[in-house]
Length: 466
Image (cartoon, rainbow, N blue to C red; front, side):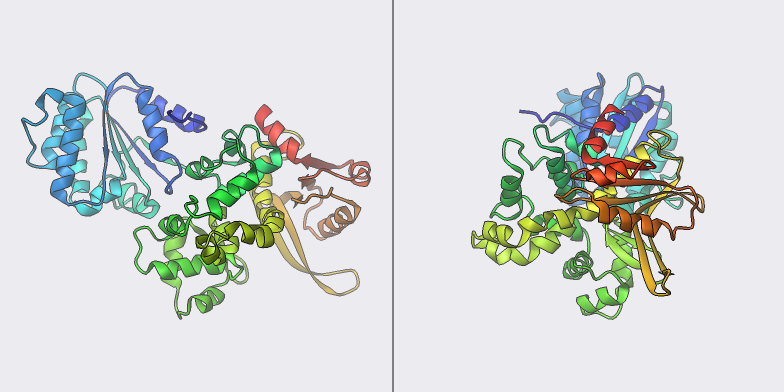
């Protein structure tokens, strides 16, 4: 049975608007693996009434790629010619597609374009020529898609790329946010939906591994801690090291960051190498990690699935292979899920704030960050102030918040600590907000007239209503 298409309403609308315009149009769609690019494009194509050519490039030789493309083109546009004609080169295939699109709308979709471009480096210049001198006068809707984010940015839409300036739409697909993730998880509680969001990083392929006819715990054990589970070492290796040399080094770097070694020197020490500038740059470019600026720059993972795997699954590999993964989960992981979710909940809170700017008491802000500052308290003692979220408009702080993903209510002691920290903020009238998994104690409710109290129920219901 075909899976129900969920999410991507905005992306579908943008694609449709471009398709509905007359003449040649070109769309470049890119994003990390498993994010749902091919699913989105195939769903879009299914909605159209025109003929379409879909070609998935693979790591094959030029001759085989030409043969595969020829078969795809003839099957879609001239099935009566299958087996009777062949094309001597890619230029003739592209001209054939252009001729078919002279009088009617035709969609031509190249999936995993970097494989084709790397095997046939001239293809970029050839497509430039074909677009300028053949396809521009047709009704072709041309879609290029790729998972190698750095390649797509530099070699397809970059200023020095042959195809630069020819696309009408450049669309980067991102992971689903926590509300979009929830669309896949009917029957789960808000807390369970949030945890799945954290475990999957909002990646469509990962979310679909969770079967809501099973409990969340059964899913975690089956997919992370069982032989044959989807989130295996091989799957993680594919995410991190695809198309990279020295995969062991990249794995070690990700593992180091996931386990709290975030500064350059700490990561290098874990990796056992003196200079890791280049691999860090590659991982930042691939958007697997993020470089945060401070007095001493540090790195964070952009993928919470990888963070969970390296923190709580990696060291259990031998036990999992021996069929004992569930024992490890029950002993060492089960009671740490809420700790793992702390940073994820902050991310969800940021998404909530962004989606409610100008509503529900949320001010107009342009950026949201965490906040760290060294201060001297009223007793002259040095102290480090940390806030989970601060909302900025330019250089002015307009919002400050704290997030608690705990089984206990946000209580008096936590409220007082939060208010004490806000006294040191360089902001006079910042909106204060608290986010809590388990709600708020009566004391907090009765002493927070000027504070926005946002429960996890509010985060989901307000989002769905909006």
